[in-house]
Image 1 (tube, helix red, strand yellow):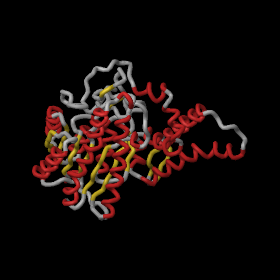
Image 2 (cartoon, rainbow, N blue to C red):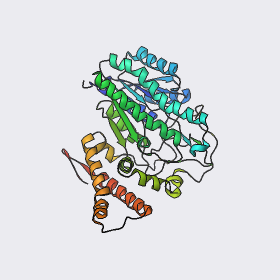
Image 3 (cartoon, helix red, strand yellow):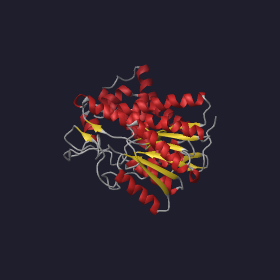
Image 4 (cartoon, rainbow, N blue to C red):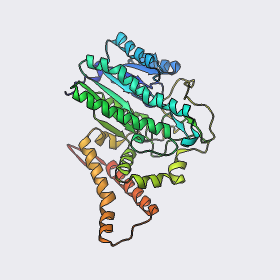
Length: 378
């Protein structure tokens, strides 16, 4: 059954993880579009500043302090939204925490805590939202996973595990809702590196502060994708041109990419700063403060993702981009190997060629724009 979505100005939207980063940027953008926003996070202080900002700009918002790892609190969040606004039209699961370190250096308790918030927090959100989304006659469930739910990277085992599991959960849920002909759409958002406070708030076992590897995009780029999905839901939406590179590398050369990521100056050094770890993090408790959208890059991040805005919500065009990547990545070397005209290069050479191909592919699609119903070069 096709999902019938209301205009944003008529929607009630719940956003978890709204105290900072992607969640906060999303709540602000929904409010600017006239939606009534129910903002949830552990930090009451950060939620209060968010609601004040929304109301100061003429919007309508409600703060509900919530630890998404606690099922009764998420149930209470859904009930509060319905009691205050009369229903729920879109539910956005965006709450997340991070932990950096070698897998063997992370305790079982720490690993479980990340999974409890990042994975079970979104499961709780889905379970709380679905009865009300069904009851409203149509709605959208949006889950923020990550491009790391497609391609693993070192030093992030708990985070990667939770994000891979989220994609599987939403895939299962999507199929079951289809089978029921339920008027509820499920969209999974796959951001690349985003400049949010997530990294400054992360627990680090690396004796250094972590950072998002380049290229890095502004949280507003993800928020725009989420806002669009509330009225035009799509199965999955990658955010950032580098997301395409991750997807291509995992789909067409996973073992080769493993080798490339295992090179310390590539897969490891790109994730840490030269600053010592402060020892403070939000794994167990929220950090004090008013909350913020952006991280440490002070605006030095790509404000928009052309790839997402042009292809992210168009699955057919995404498949065309992936097919082009397959041709560029595989056709020439395979033909050479079959004819025996060249020797098989070393894995270092293969890795270098793969990286160059992915960069060229990303630039190719980033340098295009819409003209009518087709893409043309800018």
